[in-house]
Image (cartoon, rainbow, N blue to C red; front, side):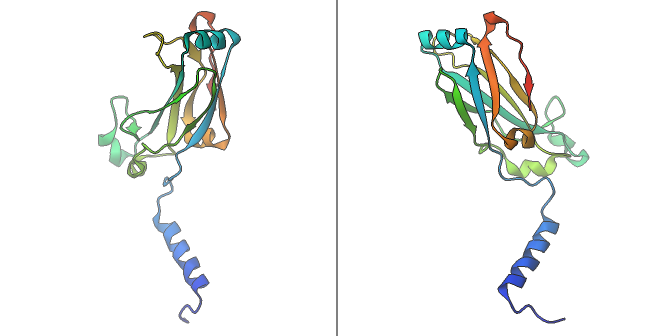
Length: 166
């Protein structure tokens, strides 16, 4: 066997070796984007009240048998110590969820891919109560990362049907 003579060959060999060592669940980009839309009544109410919107994201997954001791009270692994909360204007718009609160070391505890749950509410600046009823996300993070997910909101009193969005 001849020794490697080119740095390209060494780089390829190192990449192949790394691919064998890194677990299949390893993922460093935990970010995704959400677009929030409002019904006409919700937009008018939030504008009149000078109210904002908050997007909450929590990351989780099912544990490997060897990591079950790290599971929470519902049997899942929490990937971040707390939800990531992004506030946007009460006129609706875009929220970037960075995923920077995720403890990527916990990904090794998962039996499958990481999942994300996203909910939207009013920011409670004008009232102690949430004013909105919104679509939500609950499923594989990879689905949320494919393209920005649009979550539609209406006022709770409008009794809009909410939908699980991929």
